Length: 126
Image 1 (cartoon, rainbow, N blue to C red):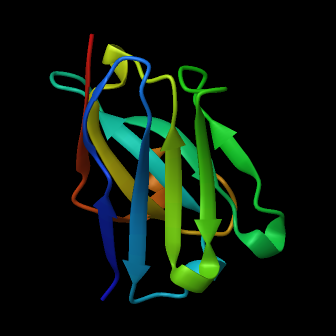
Image 2: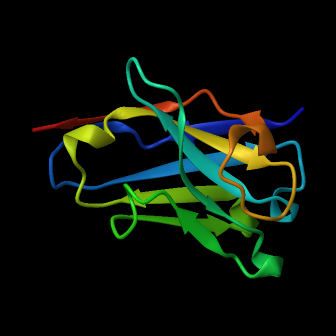
Image 3: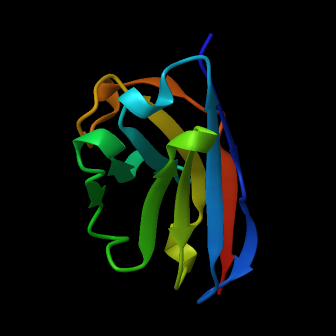
């Protein structure tokens, strides 16, 4: 059974930083792209970032709203994907989800991901 467990969320002031982690178990982590999505209150879940497998180049992709501020990375030895979030803004406030892609390539749509974590809350105060 595949499990994804996020951590690292919290309350931070605007301009601050947080590092989210997602530990995966139950599948061959290194063979799948990994992504981060977020859902703000009253809004639909949206793509944030994704990284392909290391063996295919480890390509990263970002939503325009976070480009230049967020960095995704993965550590296959630890079955973990990270999201370093800098220069946080109040509009980054959301529940952040980790997800495992169905393939090794990066995708930005939810349908391409078949496993999801429970989410970790990020709140940015102004």
